[in-house]
Image (cartoon, rainbow, N blue to C red; front, side, top):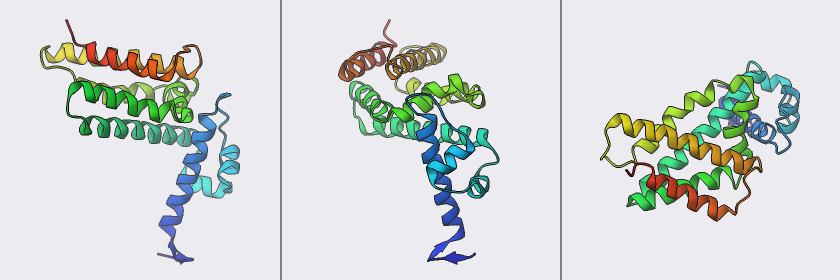
Length: 195
């Protein structure tokens, strides 16, 4: 394996790929709409197209990789939040707060995760494919009083409701203070499986 300035080739490739993903989060999550092209990603990452094609075969592959990257961050944030909280109320608050910190404090990530699937043909199916992973996290936090099918339907409905609230908040159609949004979402989670 070749080394240059003390860095191995694989490490340099990984660093360039990370630069391109960071650029793609900026461009795909731009407030004035996605402006992601191969050229724009390269310019933003300060890399040549040669390095782009070292990591991605085309623009669509970068779009999907960016979406999966942000989706994995969101999933991990939620897993970490619920693991650290001792009670159902604390878990709901920690999960909603952590998710809001990820997608509202850094709205680029929120727009990539929640808005890009509506505008990017390469993501039209991926948004649906991530739903089960998030629904499974929610289902695991619901009380065991309901049967598994009811818990599954409640989890899917709750993920959809929360996603639509966050979409409305990110696109400006829902204008509420952030703390009110968090409180409302926590209440939804806590009351989701009550009769």
